Image (tube, rainbow, N blue to C red; front, side, top):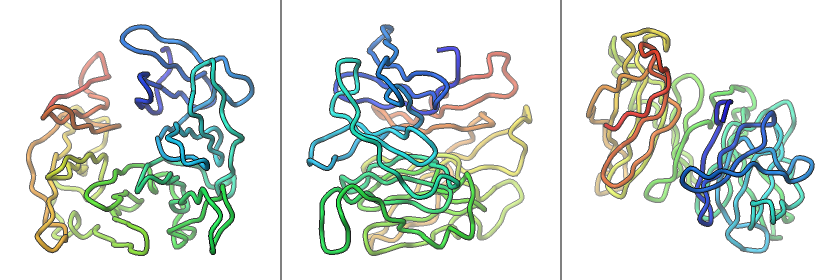
Length: 272
C-alpha cells in the first residue's frame, strides 16, 4: 500500500490491514491482496479487534469513524458489515480496539468503553459504557491507545506515563512500576505491550526525542508473583527504534515494529 497502515489483524484465513478513512482496507494472504469495495463506510477501517457480536458469534470489529464501530462475520467483498454502533461523543476519538474477556473494548481519548451485547439488568443491547469516566478530565490521544489482555487482566496505557490494568469490577494503576525510582535514562511512558503465557513484554520509552539517531527503547519483562501482583520490571534489552508502533510475540521471538530514524529506509521490523 502507498499509505501507512493503522492496524493489522488475522481473521478467518485472511490478514486485514486498515488505513483509516482515506483508503479502503485490504485483505488477503501471502502477496495477494484485495481492496474492499463495500459501499458507504463499509470499506473504511482504522483499528481492528475480534470479539463476540450481539448474536454471540465470533466476529471481526473495526472502527469506522471517530466514534463508531461495526462488526462482520464475513468482511470480504462477498460479506457485509452490521449497522455501526456509536461509542461516546464525536469529540472524543477512538484510540484503539481490544478483545478482553470475549468482549469488545474500545479505547477512546476519554476512557475505555465496554460493549454490552445482550439485554441485562443494567443495560440495553448493543451499547457501550465507559469503564474509566475519570479520564473525561484528562483527555488525550495517548489514552488507552496501547494494550493487551494477559493472565486475566487487560493492561492499558494512558497519557502522562500512565499504565493501568483492569478486569470487570477492578481497576489498578500500576504506573509506579515504571516511574519510581525515576532514572535519567529511563522514561515511564509505555510504547507497546505484548504477552506470552509466562510474562508480559513492555517497551519503555527513554527521555530522548523520537527523531534522534541514537534513540533506543527499553524492552522489559513483567511477571506475576504467586499472589497475582505484578513484580518490578526486568530490563532485557535496548531496541534501536525511535518511534515504536507495535510489539508482537511469535514462535519464541519478540518483534518490535516502528521507525528507525538513523536508517534511510526508515521502516524497520526488529527481532529481539
